[in-house]
Image 1 (cartoon, rainbow, N blue to C red):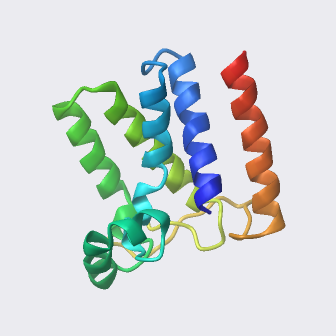
Image 2: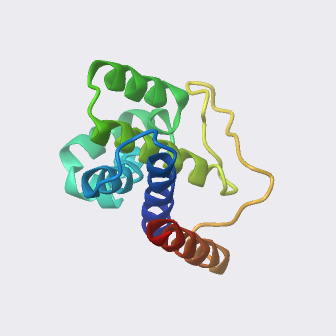
Length: 151
């Protein structure tokens, strides 16, 4: 789902910028896209995990995929760091991170948002990863992102 996560992260970052929550520039938009991939640091074969394997592998072994990095604990940690570091690009990184959790909650597997509880939460309507439904969703997100960019 990397492509879908990036598009969704960029879309939510654009939305936050248009609402005046964060600055609108290439750095914040890129940070939102990057943040959308960060929760998958817990999977060594993910886009981020394969590049940061020395971090990804231990996290994967201790917590598994869609564990602590897909929870409110990770979000709280991001918010704490934002409070400590008020740069706009970091806020965009957090927006992208949240977009990832929302995206994964749209799949049948859901997310353990209340980790360490094993219960997974998901939206009642969603799609499987690497499915035609995901591709259609990604295209819709891409059109909405383009519309926001040029409006």
